[in-house]
Structure formats: C-alpha cells, structure tokens
Length: 143
Image (cartoon, rainbow, N blue to C red):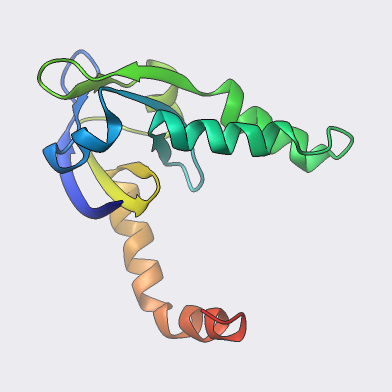
C-alpha cells in the first residue's frame, strides 16, 4: 500500500529517486504514465497489468474510452529502478506534467502520483479549501 507525501528533486539526467518506503513493493520495476490533473501515475507491474486489462476491455466504439485508453496506455513507459532506487522520467512525461526540478511523490494506495511541486501545492490548497464540500458529496455515495 502506497501512502505518504514526499518532496524530491529530479536530477539533470531526468532521474527521480523513489522513496525507500515504496521500493520493496515495486520489486525493481514500475510503469509510469500520464495521469490526471497534469500529474504522472506510477504503478507496480501487477497493478499496471490489472489497469491495462480493464482499459483493453472498454468498448472502442466510445470516443471517451478510446481517448482515456490512449492517454494511459500510449503514454506509458516501463521503468527499472537502478541500484540507488531511481527511475528515469522520460522527457515527454516531464513536459506533460510541467516538471522541472522539484516534484512531489504522493502515495495513493495502489499507485504513486508524481507532481510538479508548484502544481501539487496549488491543487492541494484548492482541495483543502473545498474539503467539507467534497466530504459531503462522498457521503452521498456511501464513503
């Protein structure tokens, strides 16, 4: 289970050190892809396989399912953690997520989200401001 929030730096070669707490669950490999809200999603290989199978089973006749599948699957990249626990974030993914030097890695149960620090802080501030309204809406669906 991935939980927690970590502020880290991307080095000049595009490498990001995965927090030590998460490395065992990744078993040396991961898949990183375009996420939502200009973030990147990082999955363990087994979690990625579950998601990819679900996406592959969606009807291709619907424009939204095709678009979402393309976003997630075509943007995906296999990553191997090096001996120092780092992965290389490809240029196209860093550009998509508007990442420069500082990033935030947030654990969200079955995935990690990787955010530009600036975008994360803006998103977090807005979400915290609306937390009561969000909680009420989730309560309506039984959460």
